[in-house]
Image (cartoon, rainbow, N blue to C red):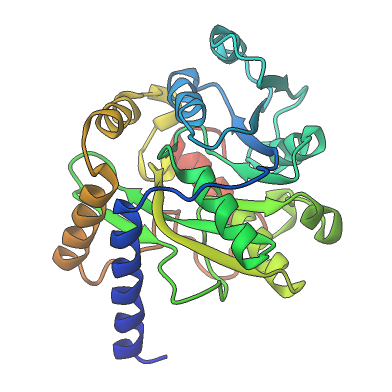
Length: 306
């Protein structure tokens, strides 16, 4: 695909996102139970805001499974503080070092027809699940995904939108927090793979393996997911700030047309930085760096042992 065609596809995606931002989320008759899985590790301050964004969903039938990767902080107490029977806590006995094995634990505990993921430092707009379930119902897709605003660290001015495709998915990165898939998909292709056993990032490996197995993908064409990559914020797991999530949550609740405003900010950022790769929010490692290299570099940036 040439640059002109790619640009046209991106413009079409932005137009759809802008229209969806001002349309109400569709109603879903006989809504299925959606199991939301959140993997977390010793960062309870951001976990609180992620849980709040799940509880704010307009979609009525969900459960949230928070899986601690051998947490030693007060994450369990934070989960319990909501007093919500729809939210369950499970803490692993050993640390896996990435979201893969906690995600698999969450899938094993899931009771829903579909599984969605929410990173403990990411947020959803209130219409996120409703739009994904409607997309899956309307298209029959195995995997539905939303547009995601990737927000760079304070002072960077970086905002990008991922998931802008004319239709479907042809490979590459999709933010895990943007995904909803049928639970039976993992029975068919297997779960998330341990980062130490693969060269690609676990999230990219998972979606590309699903694509290779013939899974159908469909995009909601709505901006409902907001990612604040910890791998772009040095020592994030040491300092454990939560002010960005708190401010974003406050704005989401208070501002009219919040999603449309954020889409505009992302487009403006893209125009200011046209050469920035919209998917370049993970660590860069040279080709052939070996199995697990991407996760190890991300852990180093976050202030964790590689």
